[in-house]
View 1 (cartoon, one colour):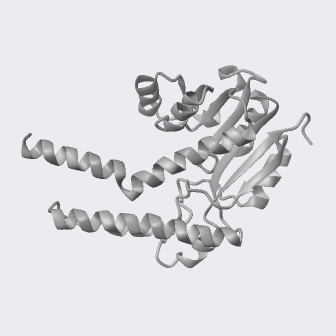
View 2 (spheres, helix red, strand yellow):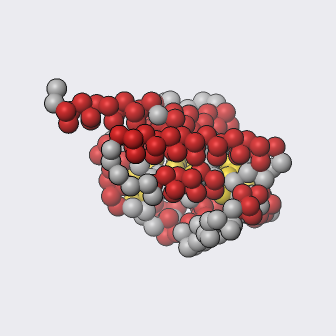
Length: 259
């Protein structure tokens, strides 16, 4: 085995067993477990904002019939080519029930998607149309009431990710949106392994600024990344006690009629 091949094997091992990789693996398991808990038997699921399709692939392994929607043409193609999963390539704000089926899905998920949409209310109404009676909706979004947003504002000049985030939600606003579009709130999670917390973002950015490829520099970067993820989750755990964490997950249920 040549020197380049050994480096490649070493990098693959590090990437697979690093703290970052372990957290990501557990975060994916958390998504799956949330959906399975709110709908015990495998059914039909729609993931809006499917990205690279890891969540849909994990759900299919659990026996679910899966479908994705993704704005990026390259990503939707990747999902199909890599996992063999259908992924509609569409601007989510232009998606309609004609692209899907009314009263068809048991669950719809929007992982860090809603804040990016021009018309979140329209998308929630669409979710209501395509869900079966008592179907479940799961939304992950950043929390504008997070204490991190206040504490780190002086360090991170863009704590709520403008302009990529067009809307900034908190639990009160999400509840209002749910009630206006035909959903009731079943659960609110103030701690999630899928948090993109502000402290982790800041520390990760610092780690990436360290230039160089020698072994010592790479070890230093790896250590900083581990520290950033670990400290971010520790802080999120603490803030979740006070319901002021950076990221929230809301589980809702379709009700028979709009209020």
